[in-house]
Picture 1 (cartoon, rainbow, N blue to C red):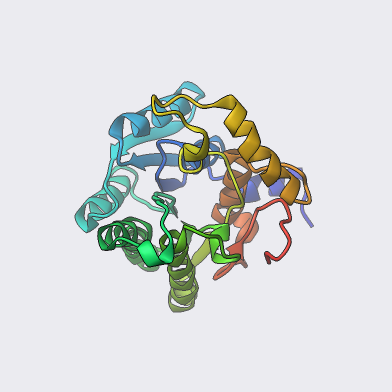
Picture 2: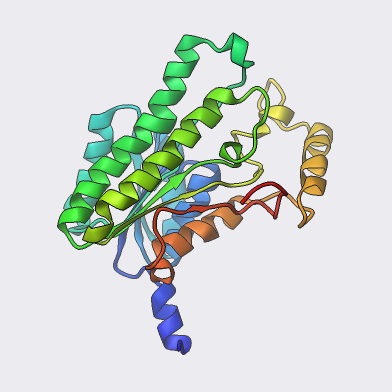
Length: 270
């Protein structure tokens, strides 16, 4: 039975090292900030180095420990260098969150091969590189938690995002397979399938050509999404970050190979 002290210890990440890709904005940014608030030193990685450093600076301003790192997850060596940097500076690697991703839209009959290759490279291979680089260290050093960011698109079909859904579905299977292979070494591998969350990825529906948001269009997009969910709201990056914290912490030491779906209770999603 938990008391207040033991429960706090179970959720605390004090002294641990975390790597988060896609940390420059949205779910990756919220995840990095939440892990840091729980006590981890977080290496905030993003293709946009200024955004990665901005996230890290915001964490440091709140008393946390974080560094910003420019990383293209589509390049294996850059991912390996990221993990090596985290390990070299702290002597450990406890948490790896593969959040970086990209999306574009096309009907199945119109999918462009270059677009297909690009999303496979980032969404699937980039996460694989992270799993491999972090996993090798974790297997040899007593365990750790790998968290892959999938999507509710793997659970219910939606038009125009077949490639995105394909890459995320493959990522879920990668997660399950890896969990079987490394579980006996104390490494847990899980995935999260967020419901609709307003981020840079989803804001394309209501973003003007100059980069500003069309508030009227935003309301038109978000209202139906909210009504579709039993909780009658869309998600927030923090909602997903809380799931990340659960899977990263000792609260989930008996959880691996799972797909957690924080989505407001959308019907048809398990």
